[in-house]
Image (cartoon, rainbow, N blue to C red; front, side):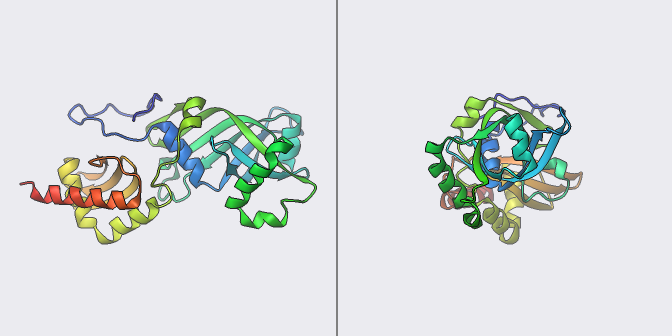
Length: 264
């Protein structure tokens, strides 16, 4: 479950705390790009050679996670791409709160080229599934579909969690099965089950806290932010088994609370 990517700028791991399973960087990057609807596209400026030119960019995704753009020849970024296809797309965590540097983000680096005519129909379908309003301009003569052929991926999961991801791993990864429902699970737990989160942190992470809040959840477990006598702490808690949908996640959480309550 671990990524081959390395951690930078992080302190040494606690020797008495075993590693808790987490999705790989490739999976987390794919999930983030899947959830995102708008990124920041950087192209190489024609007017100022060698300088990056940033643009807000909605994007669709094909089955391997390659971004799809619907862009006009009138746009400066399109003119830049026509001269040099090299570009990068920065995607950030949409619901990040607090310090944005602690939020997840991913940078895709690749060549953005016009999609061949035989592939336009499928790209059009994928794009309109995300952006229904684009139907009003998708067929304008000056608009075309471009696709970024990714050559490298850099993922940052917050403070001290970052690394390069192999393109082959990114291509084969799939968005987390809880991606579309994670925010609802988090809201429910933090609204109705804060006492249970305190209990789970004590039993499964070994941390005593007065308050606890779930900050993320995935198929393998979840993260909590804890208010302790020594200040705020974070912890990762693994599920008893992998889950594939919200129903399974709820069932496992109930089982874990029951186990925790039975402990002395």
